[in-house]
Image (cartoon, rainbow, N blue to C red; front, side):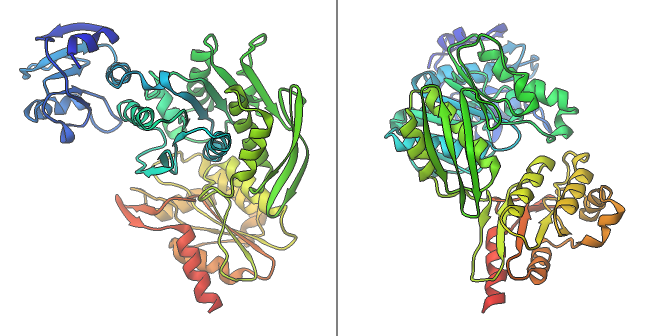
Length: 487
């Protein structure tokens, strides 16, 4: 693409050098720059891309987008106020504005994004649409799995994925939108057709600082689309969700299990193998039976139903798609090797999600709940004592262990968790730094009919300790230990 034509999409301040040239590719990582690339100097959380501009030039970049001019470069420099915004817009233009050629659903919130995205994809597939998915667990194009880097990729990678979807014939794409993605402008140039708000609870405060700041970031995507032809599907049983509602907005669909709004679930029945409810929408209702247990999955189903209905799927198609989804990796995933107790692996890693997952387990048994969990290092420390309090208050027995300690001392993270445990609950827990041994201890303490909840990592297949990623999969480790027990 010709650089002069490409720059018509950008708000630049100054150009130093020639722009009469063809650009063959885009990059923001100097290690992967190819001959003829346009290089973006992006300020990251740990490094500043301006420091690598010279390497990009040496690798063959023909021009670079900068926030401050580089005196030692001989290639063209395009000065902008915000390189991230420029990268998002120029990437969209370079790839032919792919999101304008897709039905695009964005799902944001603290908990439930992944399951809601799987449910939404299942609905669109059920009515014969070709789909793509970008989320925490998987990136998929027409069912083909691709490597996952982060929940929401950088804008350049994101637009490239969308272009691949368009080329593959995808009609509808579903994407999880993290708060980091909104704040770092990764979805800046995305043309959404529907955006979903699941809920908001404590998480990522190491980045956002306060819940108010966290919410304001999430709110941006709704503020940016409220006056456009974009459907907004909002959980009004969540206090923060109510703040998003604008009176008189015909494109907002509220969902609830408490109030009869546009999407309402009533007569909810929760079972060990799933749940059922009556879904009511304007002009119709239908019985829905989910294979996923827990009241929170009813909320996820309402969110997915709202996105699908907003994009023209009828209520029968919604029912068919919701009922077709069997499971989501690492989300209340059962591990059964013939043992006489139940083992559940879940990604729950926030106070709210941990409470909900233990609560869901409690509804399935009158016997003991044994919870194994830890907290991530180099992340929001303030949630650690709260998670310790919740786990020990709601479980019959708790084993506190390591999650992903990263660069922190594992025992220090465990001490932070323990600080939230009340005196009366101290007899109901123990600590074991080694996660594999902690899971084994839980199994040894479990009796017939008990439920062991292994929380925090879910689908993850590695454990980050002292800067190194060590292979570790809760599901596989649980399966190995259970097989040893029952053999």
